Amino acid sequence: MEASNVSLENVIVKESESTVVGTVKVKNLSFHKEVFIRSSWDGWKSETDTFCTYSKIVGASGAYVIYDTFSFKLTLPPHSRSLEFCVGYRSENNEFWDNNGVSHNQ
Image 1: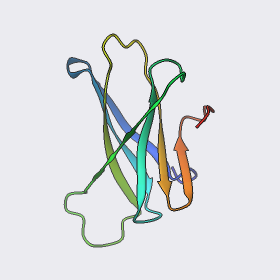
Image 2: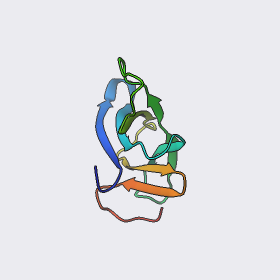
Image 3: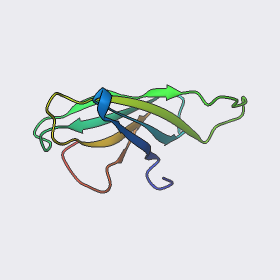
Image 4: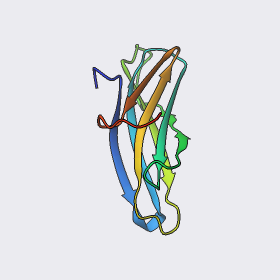
């Protein structure tokens, strides 16, 4: 996490709802930030960005928070057989990725 500034925290597949939900941790480098999931169902021939939602930490005081948490929900297309995704984080003029070190055209 420290080196990349963004990390997939957890992910859950909800088969009965045909969804994938999860959370992402990002280093609080700036107030203005975008956190998104870039996903593909066809081996990166096409891709979709789904923006994550800021998750307010219950009971957090007004103190400076080092990491923010964002949540996401992906709806699985009918008859999908595979899902690949990575996490993107944009803050001011910086862009960071958590993609398990796999390189693809971003």
